Image (cartoon, rainbow, N blue to C red; front, top):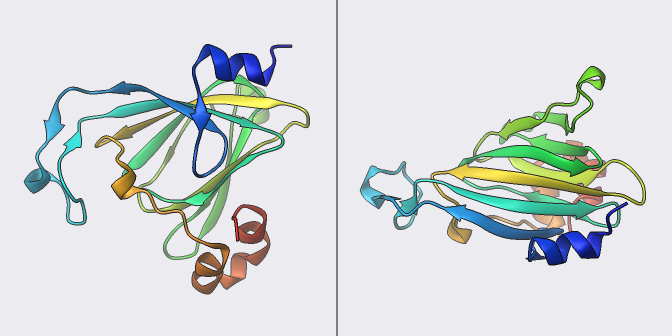
Amino acid sequence: MIKVEEIIEKFNLSPHPEGGYFRESYRSSGEIDKNSLPTGYQGNRNYATCIYFLLTSNTFSAFHKIKQDEIWHFYAGSPIKLHIISDEGIYSEHVIGSNFLQEETPQFVVPGNHWFAAETLDTNAYSLVGCSVSPGFDFKDFVLPTQNELLEKFPEHEAIIKKFTHL
């Protein structure tokens, strides 16, 4: 089995603030003018961006949100489970993977402004996925809340929030 370190080196991945490892693989050269974007964006955005994203069974992607829809694409390894909480407090989970007969999907769209976290499902494993965003990702659109911030907003989801946030 390929080792996590080999994947990190092969794709030149770096630690991501939410957990896991990533590298931007695409950023369009064209931009959308800030005046053409919905309310809440600060500055222009590229048309689209894409990253490689790697999680292991020892890491998780902490709850966060961005303004844009984010499309997740499965590439290799263990399936990933996405945990999503809408602003109305509705919780859902979705498995991204390649076992279509077990209701896994190779792509999934997380709606913009939804809180989401991810985990690798298998033990002693990795998950290599891609994430595409349009309008293109900018860290100005990224919100990584504390555990207490999310618990104040969604106390009914205490167990899942505690599992997938940092203090």
